Every structure is written in structure tokens, then in C-alpha cells.
Image (cartoon, rainbow, N blue to C red; front, top):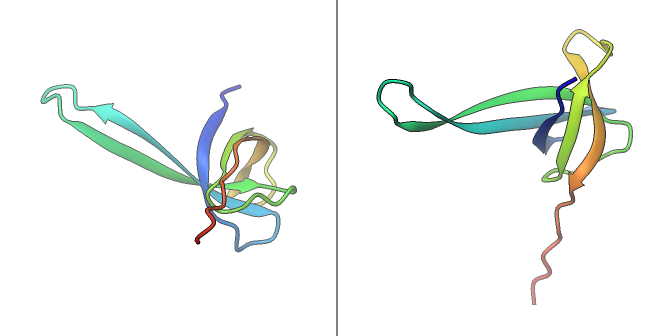
Length: 83
């Protein structure tokens, strides 16, 4: 079972969070680095906030597009106070 880590970018749906997973890759021939990103619709009952880093894994299908489940919160987004 592979554990993915991504950043929550949307929580507009009920019990669902949109998580962005991105990684740096290198072209095999030219050696240029580039970013590949993919969005996942993840089942989230605890209600994480936008900007949190979460770990998630594959699970039973909750709906047509939601086949992932949040395991735990990796890093919580800190609020910055302005003075």
C-alpha cells in the first residue's frame, strides 16, 4: 500500500478534499527538470483546512471519483498574524 503526501487545495465539497500531489522529475534524454502534478479527490471526515499537508492511501470507492482516504495530518498550516 503506497502512501501519498499532498497539499489540500480545496474543501468546498462535504467530506471531500481536493489534494494536489506534485513531484520533480528529470527528462531521460535532455536532463531538464520539470514538475508533474495531479489532483486527487480524497475522503476527509475530519475536515482539514486549505494548505494542510496530508497523507492518504487508496481505499474502497466512496463515489465515482473518490477512491482515496486521508490517513493523517502531516503538517498543519500555520496562521500568520499581521501587526
